[in-house]
Length: 57
Image (cartoon, helix red, strand yellow):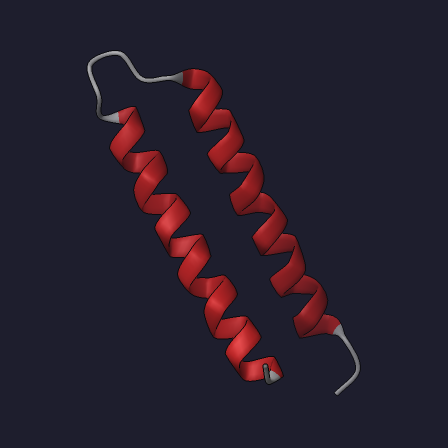
């Protein structure tokens, strides 16, 4: 997998997690534990994207 493909894959996962978070928060009784887990995963992806972006070029 090329670096570009990896970045695109991470961006897609990040967007999917954001959609899942929004969907869960709109429920009448949102599962806060699930929201927390989704946000943690989203942050991990953001951190990885940041590391890739600041790596050697």
